[in-house]
Structure formats: C-alpha cells, structure tokens
Image (cartoon, rainbow, N blue to C red; front, top):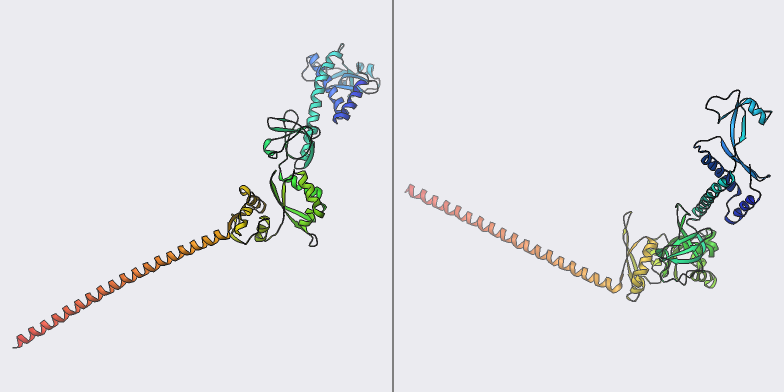
Length: 416
C-alpha cells in the first residue's frame, strides 16, 4: 500500500466546493489511474481482475488482484486462480470458489502512480466540468440569463454566464450598441454546441424572446396567464411590436403591459436601451388585427385580397398624410406588421387609390368603346352580306322571269 495522507481528500473537498466536481468522481479517477499505471508498468494489456482500493481511514492506496480459490491452479491460470493452501495463509476462513483479493502493488510504484494519476485526474476533471456545463446550459437553452461582458474578440462579444464564457456573434448584437467589459448584460441562450473542450454556448442580445422574457418578468398578468403574448416581431435596437390578448374580459391587455403611469413599459424600454415598443391588441378578425398592427398610423380601409393556406394578402388604404408613417422608415413599420400578423400588406394612400380607380375606369371605358366598335363593324358586315344575298336573289328572279317570257313567245310563234 502507498501512503498518501489526508492532503488528497482535502484537495478533493476543495475542488468539490470550487468547481462542483464530486469527491467520488475524483477518488474514482485516482483508482483508475493506479490501475492504468500498474498495467503499463507490468506491460499487461488485459487485466479485468485488477483494481485499486483506497482506504480513507488510513490514507493508503494499493493495487489488488482478485483470484478464485481452487484445489490446484490450472496451467496458464496463475493470474486468475489461487490454491486453497495459499489462500488459507491469507485468510483462514476462505473456502473453495471464494474470491480473494491479493495486493500486487509493485515496489517503488509511488512516483509512477503519481505521474499517471496526475494525467488521469486532470483529464477526468475536464470531462466532469464539460459534462456539468453541457447539462446546465442545455437546460437553460431558450431562456434568459444574466452575464458579465469579458472582452470583444473579432467582433464577437465574450460574456461570462457562470461556469463558462459564452459567445455573442455580431449578428446577435444590437446595432450601434457599445459592449463595455465589466458591464452586466441580460442575454438569451440561443444554442449549446458540444465540442472536444468545454461546450460552446451561443447567446443573443437581439432575439425577440428577450422581449417576451422581460414582459413576463415585469407584467404579473402575463406570468399568471391572464394576459397572453400572441406574437412578437423585433428589429433589435430600433423597434418592437408585440401582440397581446386578455383571457379575462375585465383585464385590459394593453393597459396591463403599460402599467400604472407607464411604469412597466418604461422599465422594459430602459432594459432594451430605449428601443421603441408598440403594444398591439390581438384580434382574431384579420382586418382589425392588421389595423392594430399598423399603429400608430390611421387606416381608412382594409381589403382582404387572398386568405387561404397558400397566401394571406391584404390591401390597406391610409390617408395621404399617414402614408409615410404607415410604411415607416425604410419600410420598417409595415415590415414589422407583416412579421407580427403573418399577412402580406400592400399600403396605398387615398389619392393613389383614387388615381388607380380612375385609370381602371378609363381602361374599362376604352374596352367598352372597342367592344362597341367591334359590334358596329360586325353589323355592317352582316348588312353587306344580307344586301349581297338579296341582290343576288333579285338577279336570279329576273333571269327566271325573262326565261319564262321567252318560252311563252316561242310557244305563240309555233301556233301561228
């Protein structure tokens, strides 16, 4: 047996407190390292009956070989069998077919075992940390968490979120936002990628679900499922539209989200660095829902152009002075309304619609004139054909009359 003292157990307990790795995992790793070192030292590849045993009370560890007690050892089975006589020397109470553990710790084995133990324990600690991080953040995937900005590397922001550093790619950052190291930040755990080292955690500061989580934290009615968030569309750093619905007729969904004197919405806007938020009242009527989604613009009318499983299209008419507001800067307002409702929205002003209707009427009148001309032309052709037929018929009748008169004259001449 090799004396290792109590320092090892104290180190195991310290690691368990600091990194959360259990003491049993470390002791098991030490025993496995002892067995691996023994096999390497003895140049043995397979030795299923070899194990290391650690005595916590005495602080000693040793390598033992388990052998079966037999009357006489068979040839070639010396590593697995022991005679009854030899077994009695170790333990007088043993009987045939019992198993006996025999210490086989080599002399001067301490240095070799220590070197092997260090390598195996380091590897096991890394594996244990990796599995702990992986399991923890797989559970946190799709949720909001708080971290501390560490640094910025190659346009990626490194955020410490507990037991690991997460990566926030550039596309998941808010445009124009300055990420200062040391600042606390609320991020959304987007994905967890398993790697050979520690798992790679991807977080986002621009995800729409951050808005949902913030509303759930600030609005008790949402947490209690009285008010329901139906849909969210977000362009991070600029504007967000959120559609809400109340399951209780006595609770105003929009008012609950705004809070007394705007206290709730102000807290959320402050968390999102003054990002504009439009709270939209959800409706099962698509016309009403589209009108609400285009707020703050006023809408004159909404015409449903297509509503089936393949397409949802609507034509929206707004006052002339509301056209730019309805479309938004670079089409942002109508784009967010489309994402929120799932409807393709075509917006026109009143004057544009009137102009389009006048043009349509002119086209319709022009088509009527063309039809009338074609009709007149067809009637003229018919009249000409009828006239030709009548003149031809009259010509044929005159010929028949002349032939009849000629025949009568011939008959009179013959009688004379």
